[in-house]
Image 1: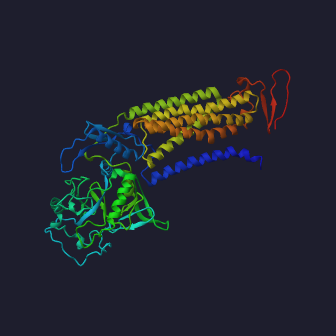
Image 2: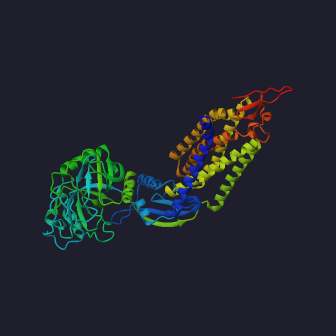
Image 3: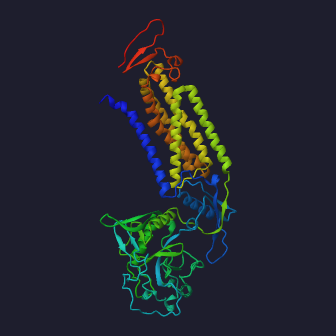
Amino acid sequence: MAKNGPKNIPARTLAGLAAILIAMTALLGGAVLRSDASWAPKLGLDLEGGTQIVLAPKQAGGGNQKPSAQELEQARNIISQRVDSQGVSGAEVTTLGGESIVVSIPDTIDAETRDRLAASSEMQFRPVLAIGAGVPQPTASPTSSSGTSSSGTSSSGTSSGTASSKTSTSSKTSTSTATQKSSGTSTANAPVPAASLRRAVDPKDAIDKKWLTAAVKKQYDALDCSKEGALDAIVDDPDKALVSCGTDGVTKYVLGPVVVKGADIKDASSGYQVNQTGQMTNTVEIQLSFSSEATKAYADVSKALIQLPEPGAAAEGPFNALATVLDGEVLLAPGFNEAITTGQASITGGFTIEEARSLSESLKFGALPLSFQTQQATTISPTLGGEQLRFGLWAGLVGLLLVIVYSLIQYRVLGLVTVGSMLLAALMTYLAITILGWSHNYRLDMAGVTGLIVAIGVTADSFIVYFERVRDELRDGRTLRAAVDAGWKRAKRTIIVADGVNFLAAAVLYLLASSGVRGFAFTLGLTTLIDILIVFIFTHPVLALLARLPFFANGHPWSGLDPRKLGVTKPVRYLGRGRVAMRPTSTTTTEGSAS
């Protein structure tokens, strides 16, 4: 059994390769049957066309806003990062006329994707100064109701999506104390008294009630959160009070100036919240990390707010509630049970996991310095088209045929190993690209096709290195089986180093180059990895098995390993069962054996 072990290693390795190919095919087949995958790779913008949208900057109140070059470039970079987060899609993000941004994406773009790209995603943290019903109030007198929520506790009619709001540290979760609409009868929905909205002197900080001026009161009373576009005319100045609506559309707020800006968010992630015992819950949360400066500001405001009353019977504050505002709209307004000094915040509010992931990605890439609206959305045709793709494929096919012809001329029957290796590498590359198109929205553009063509030469080089090492060992008088083992030990180091350099170059290109070159870098890196895999689990095992056949071991003229053509000084002949005989170089014949 011990002697049979090594003999079975090549066969087991080839079985492993077959299992990998079957698994990849099954994965793709299952994705085609159960998802939106296709058996064909997705094509990029230059080969298939897509959708082009023009994003124009907008100003609150309908004014004309001409962005600076720095603001526009910053916005372009952020939108480009958002597009790239969807995968290697080959999308293009450019500026137009110094006033707008053009986004070209393969395939069609739905309304949700357009909104996500154009959203400013400016998250702000503002103290709550007043809270009430989201519809205009006919009078300015507060009313009482038997349905009042008790302080710090939401009533049974609390609107979903805000009642479960929380702000927490990494070690302890603080229960939300923000009170929202309660069946339309909570005294928290009463309008802000007009007398309290006058300001005698400038406020001393963001929590000062002197921000409640007569102008703010007028805007607050007129705001109808139930109407679409209710916030379009609201000017969102971070240094002034803000009148805003909740995402539920039934609650409106007066908020103080921004105490922590979205630009101060260092990182954002999403997932399911973990309770104090370490068990994962069903609550979806967004975890935020602040910069050092914002950490101090967040700690200071949390220390100040915990000393204030909670939203309840009173409609005016300030309250123990810090509103989380996204693009001018209040996501939630939780209170604090303790000061948060770690710079880590957890936001929950009835998100789905998909919504949380989308939001955290936008926050992580930063807030747009401008607000944008879709000015135009059109379908664009391929910039290269099917004809250029056919030319590229023909070029790849011609290159492949030349490599095959060269291998057969140079290595005779041994060249069939090269043919089989390259066909398997092509199959694995095709499956990988198609699967990535389904799972990561990878799209093959013309630059990617170029990378595949270049990969043909890279792959052929690995086989040539291996075969020539084996031939060198044969010239030194070794048997074929010994030459295969010794040649592999020397060749694999060379192959790994060469492919390592290629992969490093591809990685650098992918990270530093523009989107037009990234497709080339990606396919070159992918095929380099597949080349190493094929050489290790197909080419070498197959050659090890062929070395046991007399046709190759005896150096048949058509085997590609003929000793006479290799200039072997002491040619040997395979006799079977590990025995060899030295071929005569003159009239004398010498026999020997090899263990």
